[in-house]
Image (cartoon, rainbow, N blue to C red):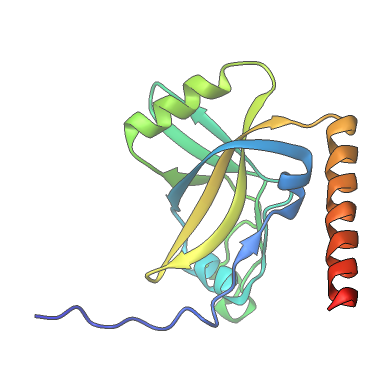
Length: 161
């Protein structure tokens, strides 16, 4: 029997953590599932989530990934009895070998795991996390200079044609 077609994901939001790309060098990424309650899923579907303050903690024994500091707003139509805590710790879902690998990578000083994107894939919420090292002010300035140079080149090329 053929697989039923799901809803189109054109209207579902993608929550991005643009600040993470500015503050960190992203070395490696991993797509994880996330364990959410019903009201949290509905809030994410409305785009009422913020990854800006979030970080991920990985432990090797027992193998676990936990998402801290991510704000998912309450869903007002659910009523007070069924609400969730907006900044509660949430469990990320990944294979044990991936979790252990991440825990080993973050044991070095200056390395952390940050959430980069939250999106829907086949009706389920996914979180893209990245192993990151912090940028210095010099690195940030160089990124800004190269971005501005690219813009100037693009402007000159558009005027020329």
